[in-house]
Picture: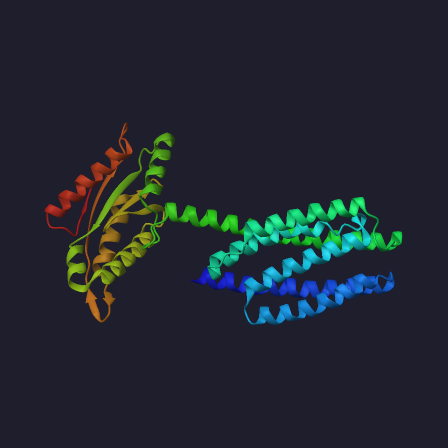
Length: 342
């Protein structure tokens, strides 16, 4: 939801930016047309001013899809005008290429936020065809106006700067989207969505690395919430989720030098990363959870946990190490619960 709101704001800012940019270019090209005595360009700019002013109104009214199409059409139209009137030397043809990045990213945003598709393939084809056609025409015909060398250099500088600015802007935006998407996928692959702890995949990967790095004198513990089914049956699954998150928070806080993951259901696994005393840490954790008062929708709950822990032994596979700790946990469950079994 938050991401969608941010994308809506981004659509508005980008379309406003381009609307304002087009008005700025109108003023610039109008001055060039007046100084270089190019009446056709001047008349086209007058039309552009009217269209671009109307486009600002559409943007403010949140008609982003229509506005994007208008922006692309206006830029293409003026590119053709520039090629016909001045020729290829002034680099008006660059606008067709620069707008490809704009079309691509704008199409992405519209699809993600407005659930509306820009005619992406059609617009790409139109840009390529008009670029090729305009360029070929300008190369095979004399331009309508002969502009001084200084005027051509000014147009080259402006058109190149504008085009490169557009491309760089959208490259940065695409770069940020790619990084954010990869980070989100990595988080989804390694983090449990409910508790925010590492998940089973992360733990197994960590154990595989430990086998290579010699995990002697480290320990692993399996923690299980006692009578968790009763919590769900009595107070509902929302309460159960609340308890899971609270137990996860306490476990992560007490076992701050350990890897804590949600193994599945109401089970958690704690993997030491330091050669510390597991007895002190796990007893403190069990005692802290037992003494905690959990409040949910006016109900006060007292939760206990049973923990089974074991040191690493030479030759243990990841599965065997976890199985050993799980056996200790089972012994604790069958002998009264609410205890640490080493």
